[in-house]
Image 1 (cartoon, one colour):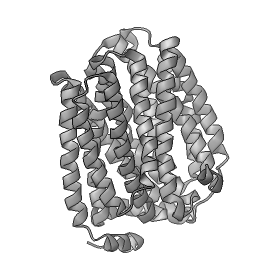
Image 2 (tube, rainbow, N blue to C red):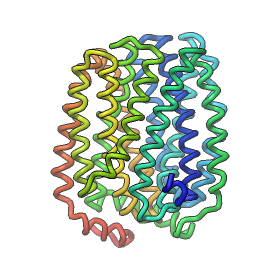
Image 3 (tube, one colour):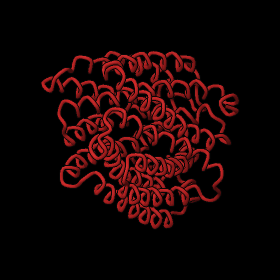
Length: 407
């Protein structure tokens, strides 16, 4: 609360993201439960998740370039308003023959999210004091955590007591409210002029990512981590729906546990000292160990506890890496760089979700958890080696002299 009071502009961004996220989680619970109810297929569930992710391949970098050239708050405002009608489209999906409506709704909402997220993340360093970035990134995990706890848990309860269709109407209302919050930030400019921001970012993004060693390693992180994260999403849904047969309420509970873990990560981060990069890599290894333990769950309540611990370690890793990126990325290129990294991250996750659908056809969700846990540990070892090879000071120096980067 102290940070939200001190960072007045971020407060509106926080409230907008929280409202937006709660509505999105309501919709997520409704869509996943509805499609499983209509098809009872893990493969279809995985493919729908992929549809929600794949648009970022095209639209995330476009959003980043727009964010470097135009008013970021205005981009966020219109993105929320324009996707509101598509939030209620699942209301018309009543039978398995109308599943295509869920795909259309999910695709358009995902396009909006692909535009929204890079613009929002690149906006944060513009309106937040540099000294407060670590604390604000902790709050960012609280945003995600609160949306999971409130949106998923309450969404599961509402769906259980009424109907999944109520969740889609609430999502539309949340989008409008979120737009009204962020409207207060329209007109706030970053320290770079519009001309410098857009022109420089567009020309140099690819060069910077390819030639700056630190960005190359982060690119690898964004490419590999979603392979495991995508399987995560399918596994957690099927643990609730298939392994322990908890239905809509179970989906809400497991996402609420994930949210609680993310909220806990900001508390844990305050007590950790040392290199952010090293901490981030270690947390990925612990996340993998958490999946190995999750695979041994004997009850749904055990699975909820393990899911919470997995999310906590993942949240600390996110805080560490996000803070490093926000501090080292040049302001005039930040939007495009975030957009490009988001494209790689979410595109990889979309592909992995399709693969996850096939994986759970061959292995049980708990067996799949062993596979993804092993992958996390292997990735952590790879990241440790590659980050160790990077000259951090040299990379930051090159970033600051971006237009003069040479091979």
